[in-house]
Image (cartoon, rainbow, N blue to C red):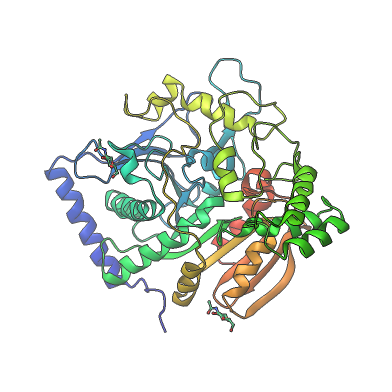
Length: 468
Ligand SMILES: *[C@@H]1O[C@H](CO)[C@@H](O)[C@H](O)[C@H]1NC(C)=O
Ligand SMILES: *[C@@H]1O[C@H](CO)[C@@H](O)[C@H](O)[C@H]1NC(C)=O
C-alpha cells in the first residue's frame, strides 16, 4: 500500500539546506527573485490590508521565452503554518485573476457602472486567503499576463500540466519559506481536466526524488469537467428542475436512447426532440439556471458544454447589463488594461498588448477525461474535495456524483446536509478514499462566485480537516 510521503524532520532539514544552497546560488549569479511586492492597487483605497506579490517564473531556455505570470496572496492568518494552494482557473485559458477577483481572493470589484475611471475594488470578507496562502497562476501560456515567444508551440493540455508542475517547483525554490507548508491544488470548471493530471505529476515527481520535495496533501475541484460527457446529463437535469415537460423527457429518452451528444443525423425524431429541448432552454443561463439571462453570457447556446464554455467565457469587450454576473468580467477587462494597474502589478511593458479574461487561440485538447487520475490519486491517499453548485446546468451535480461512484470506494459518512449558520448549505458524502463530495445549495457553475457565504465555511472546514 502506498501512503502519503510523511514529512519527517530529516527531510525537512534537507529541504532547508537545499533551499539555502539555491538561495545563495541565486545571489551569486545575480538572478533576480521572481516576485515583487504590491503595496497599493489602483481602485483600492489605501494600502492593501493583505500581502500581495506578483511576478513571472521563466520556464524556457532564454529569458524572453515562456514567462508564467502569477499573483500570490499570503494568508492573513499565519502564513508560515497555513496551507499553500495553487489555483488554476478553467477555460482553458481564463486568467486566474478571475479566480482572485471574482471568486476567492481578498478583493472584488464594487458592482458600479463603469464611468471611465479605474473600477473600484473593495475587500471580500470571505476570502480564502484568510487562512490559506494562495498562488493564482496564469496558465496555459498566453493566458492573462503570461507570454511566450511562440505561443502555438506551448498550448495543449499536457503542456499545461508540465508547465504548472515546473512552475510550482521553480516558485518554491524561489520561496523556500513555503516548502514545509501543506500543499493543495485547486480549480474549477475546465480545471477538472488538467488539475488531477498535474497533481499526479507532482506526486510522481516526489516519488522520483525531484527537488524540491512538494508537501502535497490533496486537491479540490468545483463543478469540474471530468468525463467530457457531462452534457449528456443536461437533459435529465433540466427535467428534474422543471425546465422541460415530462412528455418531452420521456420522448427524448425513447427516441435518443440516452445519447444526446453524438446523435445519428438520420435519427430525425431524436433531433426534433432536441430542438424542442433547445427552445425550452434558449433563454436560461446555463451557469446558474436562476440567474437573469444575459445575451453576452451564452451567445451560442448548444448542448455541447465544453465547446460552449470555449465560446461564451471569452473576453467581455462590450458592456453587459449591470444586473448580469458578467458585468464583473467587463470591469475586470477594463481594470487589467489600465496603464496604472499594469504598473502597480509590475507587468513587463510590451509583453501583452490587450489583456483578455479568456484567451482561446490554438489550444490543443489532449486529455478527454480525468477519472483515471482520480482513481490513481485515491490509491495514494490524497485528500480531495469535489463540490457542485447545484443550479449549474453546464456540469450538473449528478454527472459528478456518477463518476465518483465509478471509483468504487465505500461511503464512510453518508449523504447528509451540511450547515451554515443553522441553514442547509448543501449536502455532503465522504468516501473511504478521503474524497468528500458536497453540493452547494442554490449555487452555480463557479460556486464561489455565486455563494461565497456558503463556500467559505465549506472550504474552512475542509482545509482544517474537519467534516463539513
Ligand atoms: C511555432 O511553433 C509551431 C508549433 O510547434 C511551429 O510549427 C512554428 O513553426 C513555430 N513558429 C516559429 C516562428 O518558430
Ligand atoms: C469499479 O467496479 C466496476 C465493476 O466491478 C469495474 O468495472 C470498474 O473497473 C471499477 N472501477 C475502478 C476505478 O476500479
